[in-house]
Image (cartoon, rainbow, N blue to C red; front, side, top):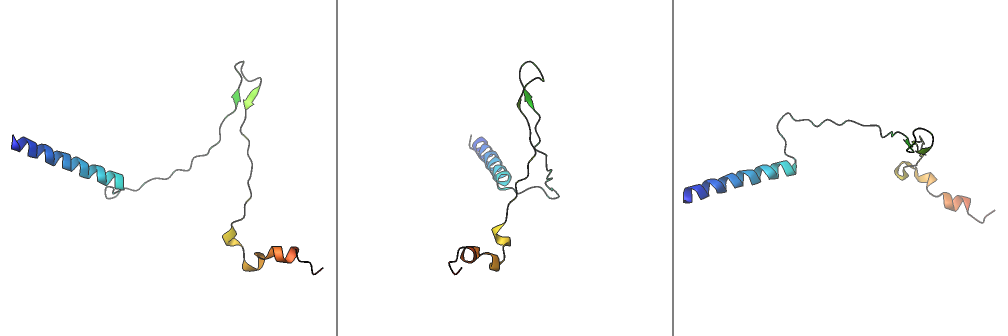
Length: 87
């Protein structure tokens, strides 16, 4: 009886160890994850009668932005230059 309990305990300990390795991301040697960038373009959604009335369509737009870390120190004091009362 003790032998069976010991074997089951070792089996559960091995499974718990494997679970921890998988959870913490330790992978097999030679394993390299592959990153694939997928386009998020969706198709149009039409009403129940077919392609007569589009209910939702995909639009392409560009969203410009400025990274604050790319600004030089001379351009960061613009409020004092544009809003001064020295006229």
